[in-house]
Length: 256
Image (cartoon, rainbow, N blue to C red; front, side, top):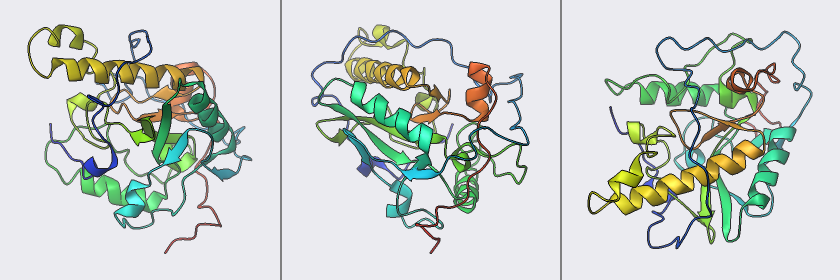
């Protein structure tokens, strides 16, 4: 599988920085929408309950933003970081439940469909990259891409304000980026150098999953940093109806 990440500057490895992690339970079995034979995701109904929610800027205590795509001058990247109002409230709540000095750093929220097309073309220009890392663009309103809805957030934990690399960099498209990839790492720690780092990253992934799950989000099985609320994946996992169609670009952040 191909590795692809230009964002090593955005995070630091937690080993040597994070002395300990609050206990968190092992990750449960995660629904993988991109696995062979996976059931199709529910369609967004013609009238979606959350479409009246505005996109709002991400802000809150122990919540920071690292707009990686804007800093790389990718086309149609927004200046700010936006989510639907309910998703933003839940994200703020998740950050406040973390023990100090942990927090959350957000890489991306709502995404312009034209940026989605750019990222998809860029990622899948790499030969051999399997599905599940960048959603294919679509013009079908019943099948919006997750980030276009405003219900999807890419993020990591922070410690003392430093964003952490939880076993991989952000947007590193390898099997190690799968959310549960490090769940067997307790055995790795006994095998030699490097295992301890995997155990720490595994425990931090568990902590991130737990606080986001408790706030109502679901995680993408193939990206530990990617969480959704009100989307088609969220509906598939929770049994609820999808809440959001794609949202228009925020008027306060016009394309340049």
